[in-house]
Length: 289
Image (cartoon, rainbow, N blue to C red; front, side):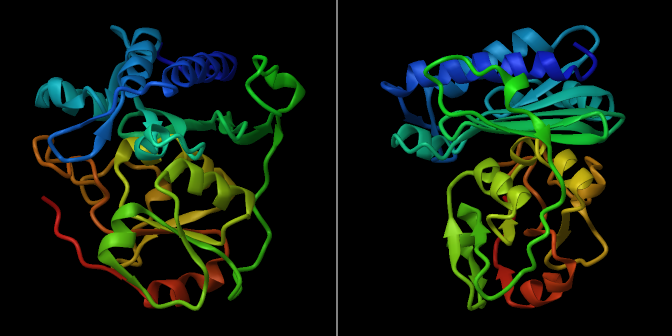
């Protein structure tokens, strides 16, 4: 499939969630070579989405299968028409029976993320692009398949100012390797998409992360349309919400342990007046491997 069709994406999210929830009772968790967990749901959902989205007219880059693709395929994918997916973002949460996990689907053309969306099945929350709009839905549960049309509504930029009471979400890497000298409450959820939805809705005031491309691909186009910026802590000129899949932004050494990781911690925030204050109080000491 070489184009973004909102209705089709909604149906894929629904089926992917069904597959994941079926497996969650017995996730068959193992550790990958980088010591991060992977479950049967990661593999099953990625296989399903690959079958639905990849083809002769569109490439697909997924967390669980990218290493088997080879450099030529990945170079062509990132410069062409490409789906970028994370089948289970928050795998450790999923495996431990928490409900803070989600599914991310991003769509790129010509080296730029142009559409995207994320779904938190057990929270019933969905955020995705629809043309130049961002839509949001929250349904009451998965007992019955959600009729999205009954819940979808346009989402606007969160208007809450950043204050000392605003929650700052951190990725696992930032929580382990970073220093955050803010008086604010901090929260490391273990899932980029869960934290990102909270920022988009104004529940959290900011998010600091060193996530990988497939983690952020579904949400970055939403952030861009909502006026939420994603600047590097160490380089004020770079903003990943310009949606470029650029080697200045991402570590594109495909054989490295940190392949596709953001090259520096990124601050996602909607209140630009607070950005410099947060930046000056945060640093992450981590060398890409």
